[in-house]
Each structure stands twice: as C-alpha cells, then as structure tokens.
Amino acid sequence: MISTLGTTVWLMIVGAIVLFVIYILIRISYLKKQRRDLITELKQPYEPWEARERECKKMDEAK
Image (tube, rainbow, N blue to C red):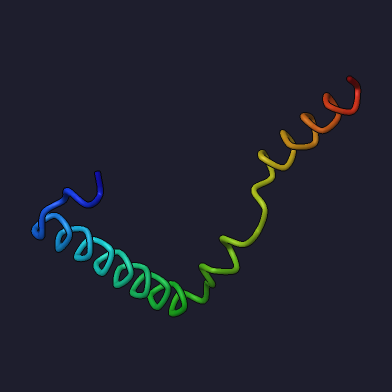
C-alpha cells in the first residue's frame, strides 16, 4: 500500500513532518523563555495512569 503512494503524497507527508518538528522546536524555545522545560514535564509519569497500572497489577496477582 505504501509503495502505491504518489510523489505528491510523499511530499505532503515529509512536509507535515518538517512542520511538526519546527513547531516542537519553537514550542520548546518559547517555554524555556517562560522558565519551563517541556521535555522534563513530559518525562514525568502521569499519576492517574500509574494508579491504574497499580490496580491492574493487583488484579493480576490476585488470580
């Protein structure tokens, strides 16, 4: 299926990826000026998911 895509589609995909990377770099730069580190914030665990993981682990151990 991927090999059937035309040149226009490939260029649009590459363009979207390039725009996404540029946006992320601009966003990281903007947040650094606001004294926030986006990468550090994203690396922190999301507590509701961690709580759910603990629940699921308990359910698995009870079996």
